[in-house]
Length: 196
Image: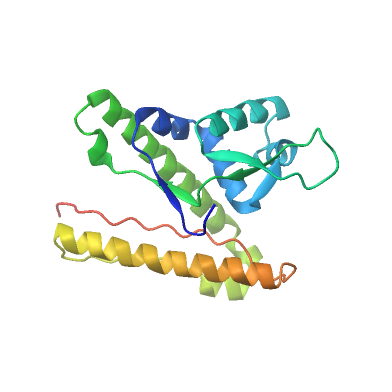
């Protein structure tokens, strides 16, 4: 997997993989862990090992994850890692087929629900993180007047900024893996047109 690589989803089968809440939680848990066994992932998502193992095999069959090199001598342990840093899809690719569009809408809703649940958890627990993290966090909304090409340019610029900081965090974690100050940070933004 190359840093910053993103998989473009172009068919309904791939999208359906993401509309399953547990598969999405497993994908995100593996994102945070980078590599993990099924038993560790079962702990992280609080589900049974057999259920997690089944869904990991499904994610692997569709190319979202793959086996990673073993980290221990235990031949029964299978380590997993993602095949791409992330994924994306354009709703326009599914616009001509009402059933496919329904799956795309369900996938977007599932992704948003996951993001919102993480944000709600932060709001509930932010005081436990301390003043430095609370003050460094971001909650922002901007009302812009743009054309669709300008919005596309803004999206590309913001994606580049996010990749830059992801790489900086990755490099910092490799240089000092035990540094207690480095935490996972979830950033999500939405930019879309609307009628006032």
